[in-house]
Every structure is written in structure tokens, then in C-alpha cells.
Image 1 (tube, helix red, strand yellow):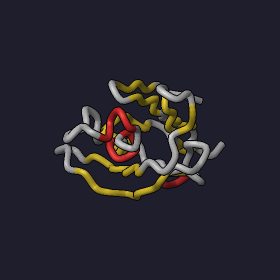
Image 2 (tube, one colour):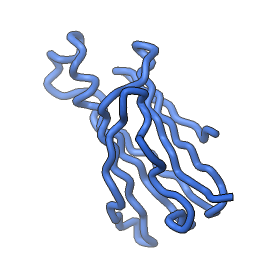
Image 3 (cartoon, helix red, strand yellow):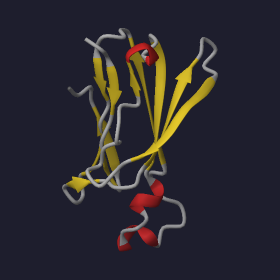
Image 4 (cartoon, rainbow, N blue to C red):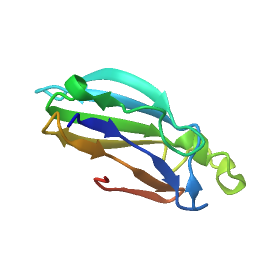
Length: 120
């Protein structure tokens, strides 16, 4: 079985997928130095169009997804007046231990908080 890394973003305040969220995928080194692997955007379903990593790209190690939610959340009238958003960039660090597993890292976001879990 070929492993893959996927993600999606749901807006809990609307109960809808979050569209056009910028997401950066970073690989972390032994000294926590970061290497940018790619930048993607969510589609109309709050997902990215293809896996972030798959197969041989799934090198075991520590990774970080950075979800740029500030601009998305500021589109709402209640949040637009804020000079500095409470949430701007949401980083999620996680480990990949196998090239053969599916790692799904969803983000559930609202103006006042967020949650994540290892999905399927």
C-alpha cells in the first residue's frame, strides 16, 4: 500500500469547508531547522487537490503544516475590524513513521480557536 499525507480545513463557525486557505508543508531537521517542501491552497471542498506527499516522498520524520487562516477569518464582518487577528498562522507538528500509512491532518477552525486530530 502506498502511503500518503492529506489534509482538509473545516470552518466550525459556518459548518462549511474553508476555501482558499494557504498551507505550507515543512520538513523539520534534527536541530528543528525547517525546509519548505511545498505550498498549496484548499479548494471549494476545503481539501487540497492531491496528496501533499505520497509513496517515496513519505520519508519518516517530523513535519509541520502551517495553515494561513488569518486572511480567511478576517473576511467575516465581525473579524474584519480587528487590527490583529487572534488566529493568523496555525502550525501543526506531527511525525510520519511509515511510507505505507495514510496520514490525514485536518484542521477545524473558528475565529476563537482550532482543533486537529489524526484522521483517516
